[in-house]
Length: 138
Image (cartoon, rainbow, N blue to C red; front, top):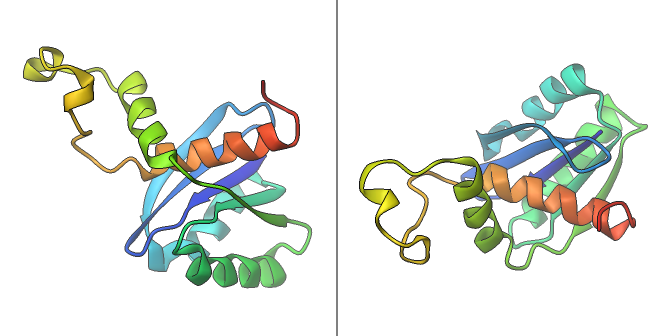
C-alpha cells in the first residue's frame, strides 16, 4: 500500500491507496499532526511507500516524513511527484464522489466550488500519479 500526501501549510490531505490505485481511506489533518498521523496510518495499513506532492509546502513536510521513516519505519520508501493541476482534478473528483443536493443540482459544475476542502481527494490523485509513473495505471 501507498500513503499519498498533499502538503499544505495549515491542513494536509492524505490518502492510503492499494497498488492498483484504488482508495482505502482519505483524510484531511492539521499539518502539524503529520508525524502522529503517519504512525497511526502505518499501524492500520502497513504502507510501504510515501509519495508527496512537490508543491511549495513539501519543503516543510518532506523532512517531517523522512524523519518519521528513519525513526519509525526504515523499510518505507519516499518520493516526490509533480502536483500541477491536482487541485482542479481534486475538485472534479470531489463532485464524482459527493452527490449534489438542493440548489447545487441546478447550477452547472463549472460555476461551483466544493463547499469543503478537497485536499484528501488531491492526495488520492497524487498517489494515482505515482502509480501511473511506475506504469501501473493506464
